[in-house]
Length: 292
Image 1: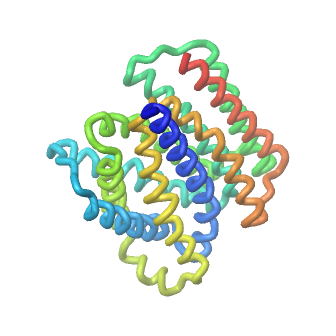
Image 2 (image 1 turned 180 degrees about the vertical axis):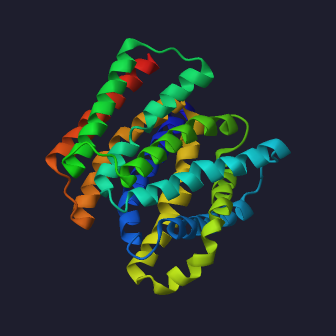
C-alpha cells in the first residue's frame, strides 16, 4: 500500500511538471512581447526565488549542506537554470512554442550519453539508430522552418538549451541521493537567480514599459513552471531512475503544440510537425534500448 501510494505521488508529480513545463513555452512567447530574454529569465526566477523562500521558512527541518555541496548547488543552478532559461528565451524569439518543445524533448538523448560517459552504462546499435532518427527529425524541423536546411540563431540557442537541459537531470541526481528534493530545488533556483542578476540594471525599466499581459505571463512562469514544476520534478527524480523520469518528457511536445495552437494560433507546418514526431520517435527508440 505504501509503495502504491508512493508510485501515485511520483506519477502525479511528473504529470504536474510536464503539464506546467508545456505551458511555459506559450508563457514565454507572451512574455517576450514585453521583456528581453535576459530580463524575462531574471524576473521569472526572482518570483520563483520568493516562492522558494516562503517554502524554506515554513520547512520544519532543513538540510545542512556541506560547504562544497552548497557552492556546487549554486553553480549548478547558475548553469542548469540560468543558462538554460536564457538560451530558451532567445530561441523562442524566432521559433514557435510547439517546435521549441519538440527540440527540447531531445534532452533524454543527452541524458543517455551522459549516463554512458559518466556512469559507465552500456550502448547498443538500437540506441545509435534512435539517435540518428532523432537527428534526421530535427533536420526536418529546420527545413520546415526555413524551407532550407539552415540553423539560424534561434535554432542554435534551442540546441544549446537542449544540451543544458539534458545535463541538468543527470547531475541533479547526485544531490538528490544525499539531500531532500525540496532543499536541493530551493538552492538550485537561488543559484540560477544569483547568476541572472547580471541582467538587473535593465529589469526595472522593462517592468515599467511592459504590458500587463506580458508581466502576468512572467508572474505565472515564476510561480508555476518554475517553482512548482521544478519542485515536482525534483521529487520524481528522487523517487525513480533518471531514465524513467525523462521518458515522461515525450508527452510535453504534444501538449505544448496544442497550447500554442489554442492560445497563440501557432500551427506548425506539416514538415516541421512531421520532423518533430520523427525526432520524438527516435528519442523513444534510443531511450527504450538504453533502459534494457
